[in-house]
Amino acid sequence: AGKSGESRLVKYLLGTAQPKMPVGGSLKTTEIDLIKRWIDQGARIDPSLPDTVAPPPIAMPMLDVSAPVHSLLFSPDSKSLVVGTYQQVLFFNMANRTLEKVWTGHADAVRALTFTKDGKRLVAGGGTPGSAGEIRVLNLETGKTEMTLGEHSDIVNSVVVTPNNKKLLSASTDRSIRIWDFTNGKLLSTMRDHADAVFSISLTPDGKYLTSSSADRSVKVWDVEAARR
Image (cartoon, rainbow, N blue to C red):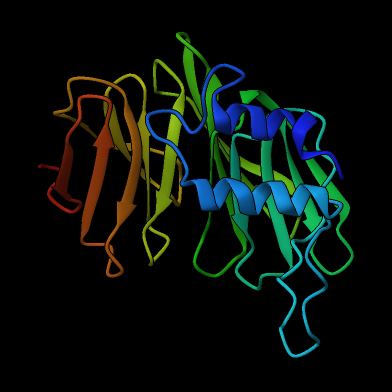
């Protein structure tokens, strides 16, 4: 500051230091003179913004999570943030950003989360890569694991529940989409038409159709009742 002749910035702009900046072009002499004058005057920062200008929004402080985060989901009432990590699901209170409870016992990373429409149960998908998929259902009223499903031969990447809570659908790296009876955990159908891992699935609001996306670079639409593409 105060010595534009010694400024590395000015030397790059003039080409006396390499590489000449900006790459692929140059500033006008008047523009370089303006920068030199600013440096000679002390390289002062701009004054504070006037009070009439609203400050930018401040992001919420980060939550303390020790393992990589694979999935996130707000509770239906927006009071809790549910975080899927390695072998655990964490429940954070959003009012004070404190950890309220932990759901343990998962085989590996929890890669998918979804609530039932009534908010009474939470479904988590995951499993052991290259070995077995896992789906677990937590009853939020009792705090106990209500159901564990494991027909997939690779990790479960996405899970959804139909609006009437009658069916659970899961997508896996094993290239399949499976439909389960959500009342008893029985496997109803297996849909196979993707040539690679199925990463995500989404239901239409009425639960009639399912869309799926895959590593095979396709998005497909399925009739849930007929269990066919």
